[in-house]
Length: 493
Image (tube, rainbow, N blue to C red; front, side, top):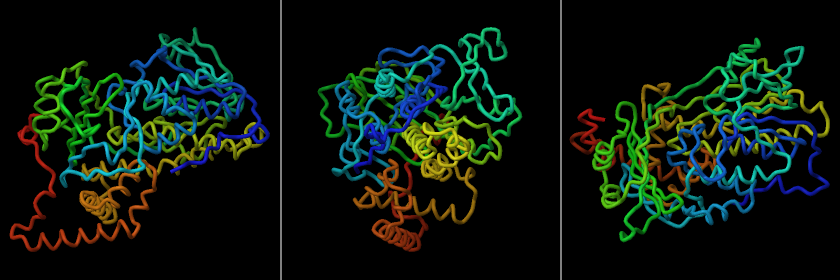
C-alpha cells in the first residue's frame, strides 16, 4: 500500500522554522522524533546517555537489542517514507528482504501455516544495523545535533511553573542529586523519548504536577537468544522459521553478515533457560523438530542472553488534567509493549508522524499561539494512534494469562473469536492475509470483522462446537489444542 508522504513538500509550502527543540534519548523513538522536529524548528538537540557507536554495534542503553527485533510492515513503510532509499541501504548492508507470507515457515497449534506470495514486505536485520542506519541519516541533518555521554537530571520551569523552558544536564557519571556539575540547556520544546526508564513521572511529581496513571498487563514473558552460523550445505526453502503455541515459542531468523538469530520465549516460570544444555533441550522439546535439525550442525557465535522486562505498560499522559506546556512524551516512555509482538519500533514511527501532524496543525513555526495546548493535544492524539497496538498486544497476553483479563463476557467473546480466526488461517488464504495485515498494523483490527473474514471464522466456530458435542469425551477435533512440552510439564523450566 502506497502511503502519502507529508515530508515531500515544496519550498513554498514548507513550514516556517523557529526555536530550539530538545529530545531526551537517542534511540529509535528519539531519532525519529528529532527528524520530524527538524522540519519545524531551527535547531534540534538529542541528549543521549551512551557514547553512540560509529558503526552497527550493541550499546548498553538498549539491553534488549541482542534479541531479534522484527520490523513490522507498517514500520517499514513509515521509515522508507521518512528516509527514502533506506531499504536499499539496509539490503546493501546485508539485510534480507522478506515476504511475510511466502518466506516464513510457521508452525502453530493448528499445524503448518500456508505460504503464499503477498504484498507484506519487510527486512530481516539486527536492531543494531537498523538503528545505526537511521542514526547515520539523522547525523547528516544540518539542524540536528547530539550531546552524548550526558543525561537529563530534571526539567527547567518558567517562573510561573507552567511551562518547560529547558533541562538540567549533567555528565552520565554524576548522581541525580548532585547539581554541582549540572548545567541548564534552554529549549522551546522538550520531548521525552527516554524509553521504559523515563523519569518524567518523578519530574512532574517533584514540581507539583500529577503523575499519570498506569495500566499494566504482564504475561511474564521471558527470552533467551543466541546467534549461529548455519551449515551452508543444508538447503532450505524458507528464510525464517517460527514455531509457537499460546505460551511457548521459538524463531530462527536471518541477520546481516550470514548470521542467524535463535529466539526462545516462554511465560512465567517456564521462561527458557540461558545455559547451553537447557537451551538446546528446550528446542528439542518443541512440537516440531525443524529448529533442532537446523541447529544440529550449526556453530554458536554468541553467548546466550536472557531478558525478562516484557510487561505491557501504558502511562496515561492523555488523561492528565494539568500538565506543563512545551513538554511532550512519546515512545516506550508512554506505551511500552511486550516485545514478543515486535511492535516497539513501529509504534515509535507512528509516534513520530503523529508529532509531525500535530506540529503542522498547530502552526508551530508560524505563531506562538499555536503552541498553547500542544502538549495536551499531542498526548490525546498519540493515545488514539497507539490504541490498536495496545489492543493487539494486551488481548493476546490476557488470552494467554487468563487471570490478567477483566473477565467480562465481551472480552471472552473477543478471545474466542480471535482463537477461531487463528485456526482458520491454516486453510483460508484471505483470512490469513487479513490477520497478518492487522498484526503488522497495516489494517485496523475492525477489518477482521469484514464479512469475507468473519463468515469463515463463524462457520468454523459452529463446526468446532458440533464436533465437540459429537465426540464422547467432549473435546474438539484432534490437532486444535496447543502441544505440550514434556520438560515444561515436569516443571523443569
